[in-house]
Image 1 (cartoon, rainbow over the protein chains, first blue to last red):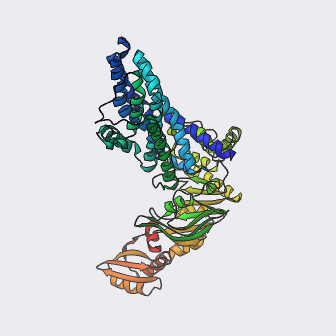
Image 2 (image 1 turned 180 degrees about the vertical axis):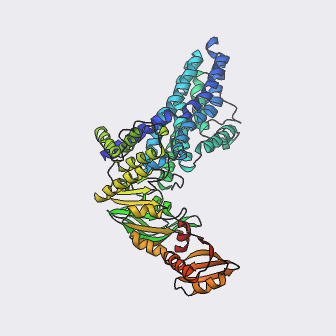
Image 3 (image 1 turned 90 degrees about the vertical axis):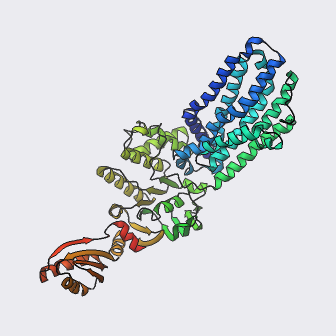
Length: 255
Length: 301
């Protein structure tokens, strides 16, 4: 038992360090830098707090940050954690060690979370700080939604990572089709997108600070508690699916 | 500790990778011989728990090869040449020891022992990305030995290693076998395994076609039919003489060329030499059309 715990912790650490120093870390900085430039140009912080400014900043966070930038940043780490090892053919060395496969997956997920969450919360915090008073209000309102959405993406992209060798490409297509197109389509179809539940939480939380609810024809609001639990459910269900797939999957291309 | 294949069959969709392989590999060195694509790698992947058999069972000791418990008994040296390239050899072997669950002190101790065994102690601080092929092979071997497993699967472990290195590694394999470890070494070169293994398993087209000591297997291989091409101005006369030899199974005659199918190549060549001298027949060319191991394995299949 003790040896298993030690082996698991070692795998978490090795995976964390390898991800941290991988090219993915630099790649995710690009969309974040894009957001930074956009915010510097808009200069939300220069005009002080107003409901109109809060509305604009919230729309930026919901339409750009949560719907596009966040999934792109998370997929770089999540999809790369197992399929990266698979692509560079080092997963083999992990799979022939005495660690149950679900534990291997859990270690990979745990190694990814600090990076993905650190990046999401860190960049969100930075953007809010740059936005001055509207940012401070947004940070308090939207942080739980950002955290839960990030965790849901981490878990979901691990399903792609165990199922497909080039998981990053699949996750990218998923982000464009499901999160960007379907997630912003009118009607019930948008419920297939993770970001819908994050945005539903943000809309509900932001109303206290003057955020106007979007046109119900385009965005049907959802109870924030239900939206939050749905994100938790997506995370747990995705982890369970990933664990089952990974435990049973034969990888023919490891050596 | 035994590695056992119990009527193991593995399908890749409609393609059969290994077909009803049934054998037990015990302590000592067993060679797994087969041409490229014969099914060696599939068998090794089944034994290392990377693949599950479609039919039958693969066990390491009491445990199913796919299980986590079996992995404790297994040291695996893959044929692929991929590592955590950013690490040094010492760091990599240490990481593999950590993944086996050892404490920091044990890890350090075992890493040094494993590197010492493969002769890499002095050079192990080099980054793996900058190591030669032979050094990488040794590091790969060290990670397989680091947890002192009773069963070792070595997939083409001598590939790319210089002659001196081969000698050293062969000595190491013999020492490990003397310690009672069960070692399965795969190769596509009979000569390489003949020097090393006490027992050989020959696989062709997914089937286990021969098993025994190297001597027995070589005899079996030599008894397989081979085709010899002879070119002579007196081909009809030569064909008549060859037809009388017991080891000749069939002769095809086309102008000056004879294609002779023989069952024992070594004896055949000796006899042909004697006939040529005795009957003063001029032979302008004599060659074995399929002398390569692959052709031999084709026949065995």
